[in-house]
Image: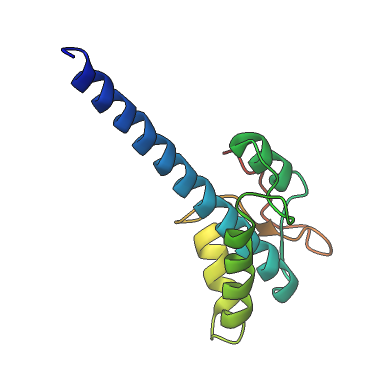
Length: 126
């Protein structure tokens, strides 16, 4: 039993690390789905079409759908954006927080280049 306690401590540390990774993945999915909904609400903002694929590769799961492990987190993000759409400055806040140089999660959303030759575009890198 002299190796029992260190092995138990190591197992707990691994489990805590996995739980932290899951929380971070769920947070990323929630933020992605938030900006996905914001894209529909903010005429000048768009999500790069590769972003969802890059997130799925990073977390190892589908972002959306009934079988997606973080589907509830996605719904939370969609609902939060819908709930906030009438707030003054909503689209500006989305850009500030999640745009190419965002303060929360940079490059989840970019300015739409359609009809705007000066749009700031970017690619999300997990």
